Amino acid sequence: MLSLADILAHDGRGTAWQLARLRDKPAILILEFPSLLEQGLALNRAAAFIEKKHSAGGAVLGDAEMQRLLARSGDSVATFYFGHDYSAEQLQRFFAQAQVQGLKLNAQELKLQSLLQAQGLLTATAAAPSTASPQALVSFTAVQQDDPATPSDEQVDALRRESTLRHELSHGEFFTNPDYQRRCWAFWQQGLNEAERARFRSLLSSMDYDPGNEALMVNETQALLMHTPDQRAFNASSLGVTEAQLQALRERFRQQP
Image 1: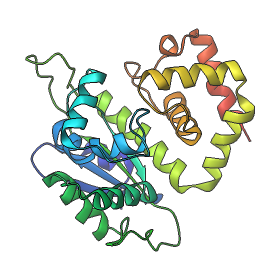
Image 2 (image 1 turned 180 degrees about the vertical axis):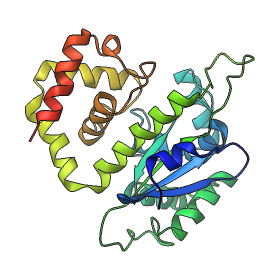
Image 3 (image 1 turned 45 degrees about the vertical axis):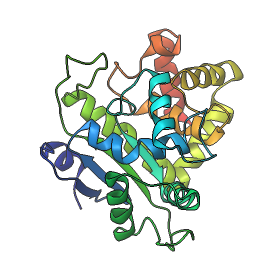
């Protein structure tokens, strides 16, 4: 068990996948990948199945369909996501559906499946994991430089790395801490008015999240608003509000019972 500072101090560059759990949040499995590309190969297909508005909840995408989704979003395998977060139940559904379809998973996805089974987040059958409390996976990557030969921004500097981890950990908290999840729902339903909810929903839809998935809207809102210190990822302008209005929203969340 490590502290957040311990995890951030680790140099994850190399080839190995690094696993960790926080002392105060042991239900969240943290996976650091050595690069965005390795992370994308392992988790992008799960992301499309679980979260994306044109593909979530139906069939797991094949390789060609996944490439078309990346092209539509203007991303590469590396830049589709800077970090990932999923509950154990969501991951179980993804792998079970891939099996039902007879879909051939890639090497990284198979490695991830074995790792999650070993860590108790997945079972070898379609049944839900037999755990007394919910678990979640979050991922981020080591620091890396941008590739100037591509149009995408693959740079992960120290700020982006820490911001991604903090953002993803808040999702893990949402999945595994019922009290925090209740507070986030209360903020969404009572702390925000309809126009404010519409702002977040519009922003998230523009990021290709499924706007009809209310739990996803709640979870992404709390993470962007309260746990994303890198302003390249989220700021007042991206939400269409002033800095004072953004700070007022944050204070409202802090005061939410």
